[in-house]
Length: 231
Image (tube, rainbow, N blue to C red; front, side):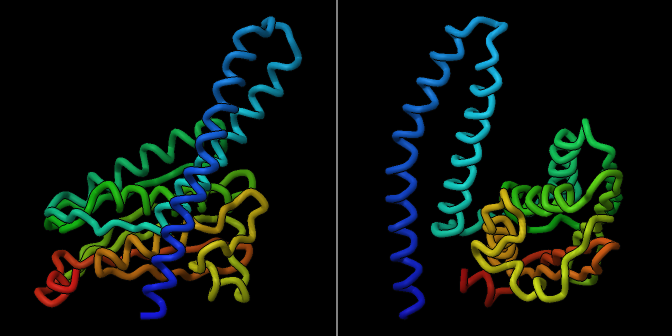
């Protein structure tokens, strides 16, 4: 009960905080757009305007992650093709690395039974994992995404050739606000785990410094009767 009250307080705080920040942020964004229209095309201030736009987008991203972490909504599951959900996330991640020497490979699983899942939430979770993998790679690298068929489950493997995660950090990476990245919010992996657990699944990680990391997300093909009742 104490934890439930704590989470309810956090949710109320996050909602109020997001509202109080987003209103003036929208005003700032509007002013920046007006300024950018009036600037000559040769003005060096245009570079500053671009930076401000990026910072505004980053603040909005942080607020969105905060709200989704503090106010999770239950997944709207329906039987659908997990291959399609994963492929959409991979396609979007590939757009993020067009200018980088990073290759994202996908191996789908033909004949995989439909998996009961919320495609939007699983897409969001997987995109978080993929963008983390991109940020973990310095220079040239590869991210391999594979789908595995298990007796009553399906597993998604995300393997990167990045820097790897030091052993002392591994126990903490799914904690809210825990980050080793200077520009990270520390909410992406926490939100990913919450989405997976909302599907009665598991998310696990193995990593070796200098060689890379592997995240494995395992989802039941369909929730058991007791799990469905609990949700």
